[in-house]
Image (tube, rainbow, N blue to C red; front, side, top):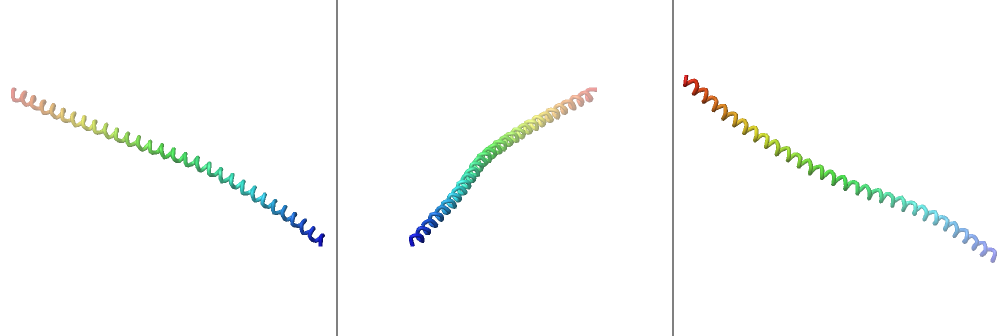
Length: 108
């Protein structure tokens, strides 16, 4: 009976060691997975920061484009006004010249 209990105890110790080895293996696998997930999380955080920076840059470009469009619109408006004034001046000058020609013709 003593040998039987001794063999049971030895088997128990052997099984405990096997369980410990399996547990240690699982712990190592879990630690590896944790490190892998931490790295993925770091990369995702960097990507989020990069995305935010790009979104800010896009918004700045939109604002600049709007300013440029407004500036171009303002310049076009000024040019149109200048052209209209020039045309009006030419029309007035043309009327003046026609009157002078009429006076010259009537004076003959």
